[in-house]
Length: 352
Image (cartoon, rainbow, N blue to C red; front, side, top):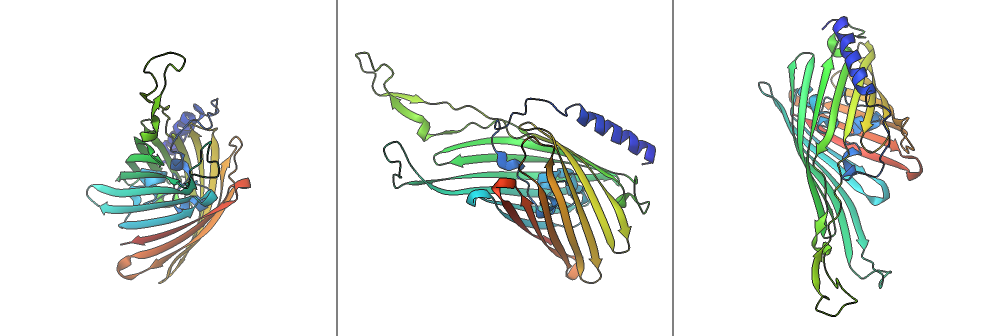
């Protein structure tokens, strides 16, 4: 792909995003399943969630399924991310490389909210019972690098949320593409040039809670004589959309010298439940012969977003070579969330 075609693609991508930028109202608090927009994978988290065009590991299940097309090894990944107010979140992914058919991956996101005491008007200090809540998303993904400069991917997911006796579920899918160019490449090779990534996440059905606590017995005519005192009724709750996110991003390598390289990534996001924002991130990678790769990462999430509490993020990682051209990866990320404090995430990856 020459520079002229690259500029045409950039123009089309830019105009497509401008067409949805700045739309109001922002609709905060109008979606369900918001655990789907937390961010999973310590590499992406440490880069300020600016990862839609740079992802090449199994965490692409979350960021952009087109990134699965760049996997060259089978991969297992597990991430633990203690969240706010004792909420625990985790991600697990397993990717399979099939050279003739593209790459496949299975993913699981789980969020546990811990236990709380059951209270009511008569027992405001607690009834002695406890309840808990949880969210999960199970997904199957596919990514394929059709030609050297273009990859696309798709994810199908089942989403379930539960709180005490009530639960809700939905089905959704993600779509994504990544385009490689030689534009801005310091070496003239496409792998070091500008990458363009786009994805749409969580396009699916609505979630509506249901359960045994919504079945009640009421008196439908308390002021009239008659047998109206034990009429079975069922409360119907409102249904809610999933957090739909459109991501558009670019990444490039301004420095590629011997065993050292720097990556800069910029993502623009258009969610259906908040204002638009920009994520920026960077990564410095140093190859140590016979040992592996050491990485330092820095980013900032949700620039220009309305009333955002997100801010600086940073992290580090080590890729350790093992026998058979395989590797073990350990990554860490910290994210600042303003008055809510900070969060840490820890990721362990095996390439085999």
